[in-house]
Length: 380
Ligand code: AMP
Image 1: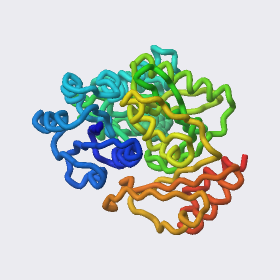
Image 2: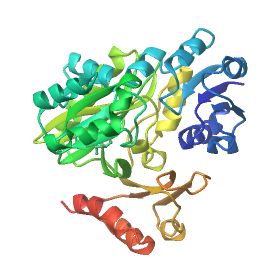
Image 3: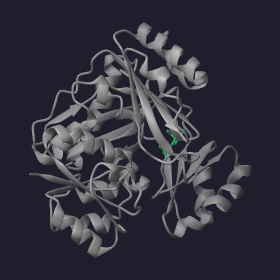
Image 4: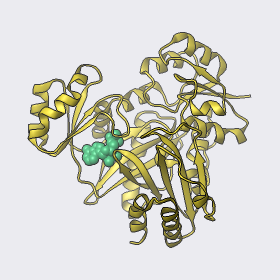
């Protein structure tokens, strides 16, 4: 009997546990809250990630540990890795937690990135804005996600407001200034690397965000083979440099045929949820196979897939369930503004069929605006 421990008990841990059931796996989850939604499927230990007694209890019950949440303190990951195997390794986690370390690594590996500068204080922000120019984005180096901890500086007149909003965090989580990329599209590579170094990637995914939160994903992204190869090469170089084990996502901006790396998510990723029904092996199953040292499954996809995120509240399911390729995922969470509460995946054999299904679902659920950009791309 193998037990996989997961730090963080949100929907990613929940879907990991669901995909591990056919492999006969058991799970233990450590989360800070008692109603973490993965706790509906696996025993939950409630405790702070820095609490050594909670970590010790967790470590004593699992064979291997992994994450559904990348902001687990690096010291806790380190503490655990002295006792049990932890994948991805704490160094990879630590780099992915810090936008400055991450972008510095990308650049060192020859992966193009938007211009960026470390911002230590108010004078540093002025210097960085002067060097990078406007528009640009001030971000917290650590603990930001889904567009949180970010301030867009459209012109030099916004610098004061940006500092008012985030300046206090320069001394705690650090700040980074990045050039604003007027991208044509956002793409992600979701990939997996096994304990033996085997690397596989799912077809490239195109993503749409609303207010910094993922709204829809389409796979395969409609890009030429050359661009897809470049994206895979970047992902592979990163995985090898970090000796990464497990699934990760590399988020990319596409502009004028160029790919610029935005960030590395050291875990299964929202832009890979379509793999559950759209691919031979889902990201969740392959993550578990990777951390357990099992053979990786085929990442080939079957047809075309679109994932729609449900944020805040779940819509009515029937419009998706009546679609032949419609799949419903309710995370069992309480509705709350801005919270990811579920998703749907639509799968079809052709782009035209997928566009028709999306149009129907958009109209039935009153989500026309959410499906519109995907339908537009499928029509090209
Ligand atoms: P992040 O938390 O860095 O993934 O940012 C969330 C979203 O904000 C991204 O998916 C983009 O839509 C947008 N964004 C972040 N950084 C930039 C940038 N440098 N240029 C343009 N848009 C950005």
